[in-house]
Length: 248
Image (cartoon, rainbow, N blue to C red; front, side, top):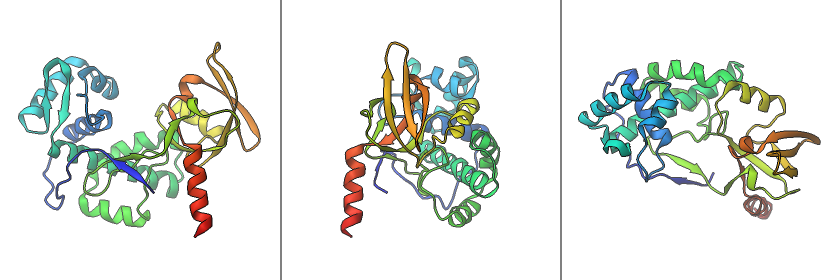
């Protein structure tokens, strides 16, 4: 799988420092929200963790003092290399746990993330390595989110566009569903809109904010807002990849 890495310098993980689950959760959120350039705002972290901005601000100052983030006042925070590594490894363990829960224990994908959050803090480096091998080193979680590499480096899908930007009647494969709201994930699962599914956009209704899509010969209507949070492989990239496979 081709991918593009974010600029987080990796560091060895053989001597992993002991940090609290609370610190891991904060650093995981910072890593999830950080785009590699702009500081992550306090309000964004507060929203993700469902914690008051005042409590988040206090914790971020502590993380700054401990060397895990650089606090830039009202502008937010950026992770240090060590903070980014801890956050990414925690995220990796969550997403590996999601694969185990969904692929091997039959848990539904709409609640797998919640359950995996409870497991991630109990997964040691040794268990993580065994779990990854058992799962055959998956690249993504059931929702299509990239799983960070073992060294803590991150990557993103190449050749991806929002479903909203897919031309009409052009087939494309779903790469990632960014939503983590259980009710929405349940709906998407019911219509088989999951990573790996092939779909086409049949109609757009801009005034109503709706899209009609076709999956396996069945038409479904979804909101434009929801479509903006679904990544598909760019059609020309998919055609190029198929041609490469044919020539081998």
